[in-house]
Amino acid sequence: MVKIPVGAVFGTEKDFLNYVKSIKFDAFKPRFCVLHATGIDLKSWRTHTMGERIPNIFAGYKKMGWHSGPHIFIDEISFGIGCPLNVSGVHSPSWNDISFGIEQAGWYWPGRDVYPESIQNRAVTAIAALNKLMGVAADTLKFHYEDSATTHRGCPCPPAKPGEKPIIDKAVMIELIDKKMKGI
Ligand SMILES: [Zn+2]
Image 1 (cartoon, helix red, strand yellow):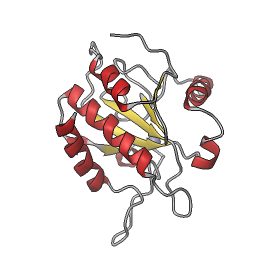
Image 2: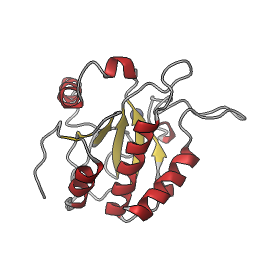
Image 3: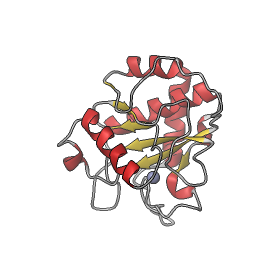
Image 4: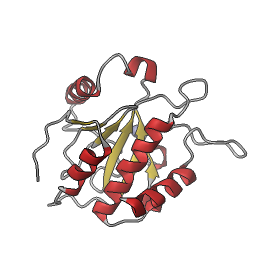
């Protein structure tokens, strides 16, 4: 496997997919992906590049005493690597040892960011690629708020109330991921 430092950024889907395909698991045996959002609105996210963001975010985690963070970062123009993909990260208390964490730029709460297609497409690509690497189906996807041990009840977006449309629709994501898995 190619050694990729924290903060490595892939600008193209092709380079990202090639990297994911090169991963070999050892002790870490993930079984699904967990979707997150930073809660930093896109307007402020854009003031730094992905390559600057990830080391800063990881420095913050270190201060909190975390040994790592989520595996993949997604923004409007790139894929970034946080925690190396062959070891467990820190992103969802119940699932750190058995899942990949996918962190999306943006704050997907009512009145905040609208979920951009550019981020949705990259999240779908990342999860599809990781699912294929793990050998699992699209419907294994979890949203962070589904972890009963987390306090992040609004990550990656607040759960929709009955009759409301969620800002990030899990059923739609699963459908798109399933389709993408067949094409890569
Ligand atoms: Zn989260």
